[in-house]
Length: 84
Image 1 (cartoon, rainbow, N blue to C red):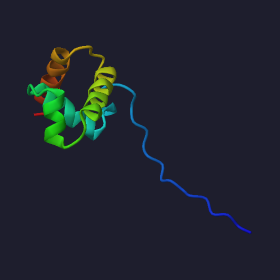
Image 2 (image 1 turned 120 degrees about the horizontal axis):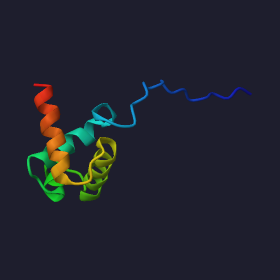
Image 3 (image 1 turned 90 degrees about the vertical axis):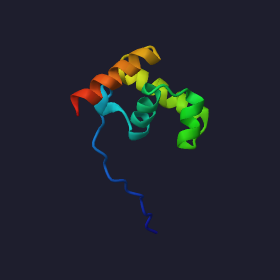
Image 4 (image 1 turned 180 degrees about the vertical axis):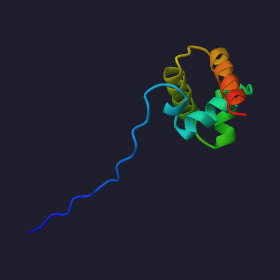
């Protein structure tokens, strides 16, 4: 009897830190936080739970090496200006 193995396409590895490390969802949440939305408001905007937003914010903090929403906002503004 032959068993079939599920094969997965190899994803390119994502860096562990910096902007390239952010998932699309983390980037979207970071941008919304940067314009001043609370986690609850971000959750409502994206139609996800506040817990999901908390997770994305925490991951963005870790990947960008920041520890506050103000620092995150500065990083987002700098990144957006550099890529304009």
